[in-house]
Image 1: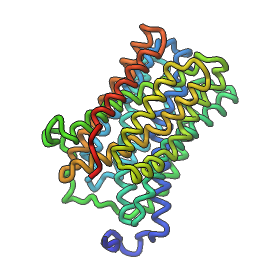
Image 2: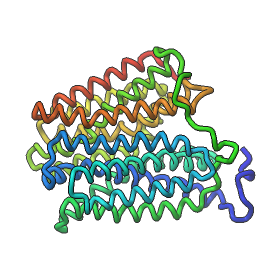
Image 3: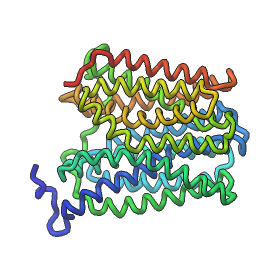
Image 4: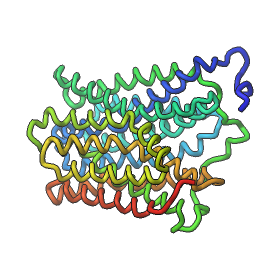
Length: 403
């Protein structure tokens, strides 16, 4: 690889400076847009329910609005990812993420939250898709692709920071709306630091000749029972299977003894395990094969979903949160890598199908689970459904081997 071809004269940063800038900038973008902007709804959901009188079904609808925005944003970003202006769109996504997080301080009706969370999902998709393209391609050019794990670890770091910020704001007497405002300030700080780091990245591979290339959503993934198609189906089931617990686990914690302590600890456990999980699953994939590790991650997550949904004590919830955190980003990384391997010559199209499948799964999950919980009076049935879909995903992945 000719690194000199990507430099623009004397203004190009040195590799020594660009490598930490790329990894750190990516980590901070995902910490703000995903760990805070997308997932802060989970720890603040019980407070929003109390303040606004939502049913659990309405809470699920607001979560689904976020995932609808994410699906639309991911598809739009797929058509922008190879355009020369992709960094401009990334910055716009970063700004929108900060604005939609901080605006929670003023949102007082269900319709406000539906719109706000939809726009937040749109922003988080732009940050994830475009940010990953910019950062990972820079790391590949700088011959440090292994640092992509630090980039993805930003999601867990953002979750941890959001828990700490919410607890500090709560101890200072802030309402749930004030806590959203505090998270908006934290998000602005992280995005500002990320923007500073992005200035030092070498130019991307996108150029005018590539501007019309984008993942195509259509035919061409092979037989519907073939390995790639089965991987896509399984990834869609994962989208539903993980999101039920990821949306409602703090609401589940509110029902146990000493809930005021268990609620933040449960979500903190998710973040602490999520941060290093990609490295762990990459290591296991290297030792035992990618699809073997992927099936194991599905199984571990299914156990965590059942522990959180059926457990009646603090230990079960904490362990359920730990298993969720230890797997959900690892499955994303392994699933996308597996689809790329199977697609071989049409990877863009495979990534498009994976985006659609995952987006539909997590879009349907909160709304269906919220209604099931509202009717049944608990989270056992939706958790059982989610775990069952994860096990079905293992069945679809069975027999697929790493190439």
